[in-house]
Image 1 (cartoon, rainbow, N blue to C red):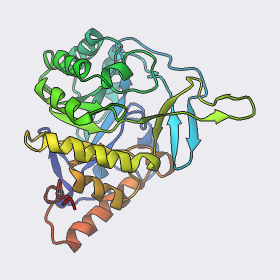
Image 2 (image 1 turned 30 degrees about the horizontal axis):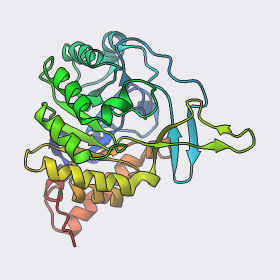
Image 3 (image 1 turned 135 degrees about the vertical axis):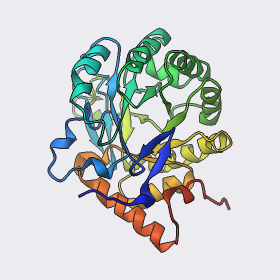
Length: 312
């Protein structure tokens, strides 16, 4: 049963979201996997970020690709995907764009590849594009781009030239100054941000004294990274608030309280990822908790909560 509550509706980069919740890239396949879960409703979410997509098909990394860690998980899937044209021609026609918003996730190993993927998606029904310049489990491309403000700006600029659809830049926490990177991306034409991507992590099998993950390292997600994600959202919001650039806050959100913290810190949207793996029906619970909080504090909308943090 969906949460039909106008208090939860937001506008993100010109798109109307029914709720602030966004299902994160890599956690829900290409928009068809989770819909098979009994009780799931698109009315509980504002948007879905599709799996990371490169120009050509990729097989991804060698196993193991996922490893559970205290209060989180490490993944190094390596952007396994069937390629942009297959996604556009075969997968997108199967999605119901009347039910929710669908956001493509663009990845590449060169600036030119990002631009070409964006150009192809521009001529598709996709609602917006998320630029994944911060993938921590691919050996080329993502990491270098995401941690270098100059490269980040170049990727955003190249994508901006080939599309008028909303661009949401996914920022890496594995960099020196995330606010400076955000500034450069705004100058280059991004419409919004997703903050944060996963942190670099490792787990070791002590019996064979080797990394558990086949890629040696991967992206750490889950509740373990939430305090870092909150701080990064706050830092990026200081740059965004004067430009009316919205943020999808993400990183370890598993409850309504978590979501409310991110809204107060400056996020407009709330990204749900790792939590979906152990509770695929967590979204209506989070929506209900946010709604109850708004009622208890005499607030008429989620928007009244965004960026209301008062520092000590």
